[in-house]
Amino acid sequence: MKMTFAIPDDVGQRFREAVPAGERSAVVTDFLRKKLRPADSSLEAVCRRVNKLKALEQDMAGWERFDDQEP
Image 1 (spheres, helix red, strand yellow):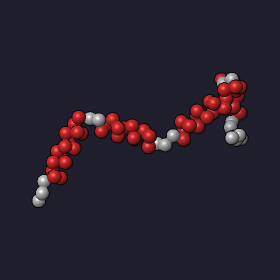
Image 2 (cartoon, one colour):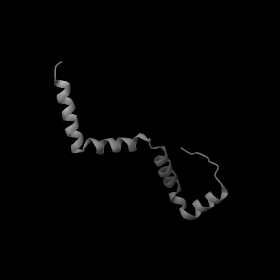
Image 3 (cartoon, rainbow, N blue to C red):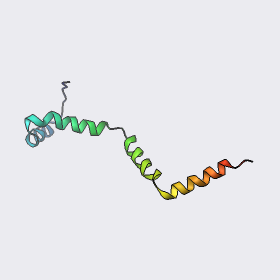
Image 4 (cartoon, rainbow, N blue to C red):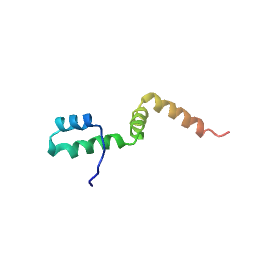
């Protein structure tokens, strides 16, 4: 897909100087993918790490035993 953007002259000039012509689309695509990545992905990563904690396993086991008790 072709798109047209307006950016400040100094940014455009620096981009042209820093990125060779054959690589510009790939660089812009990479920037956009990173910017558009859902913010939840970082929260998901934190949740995965926390869920692997031994202390959490012990706490959860305790809560599960509590839930299994009949009143």
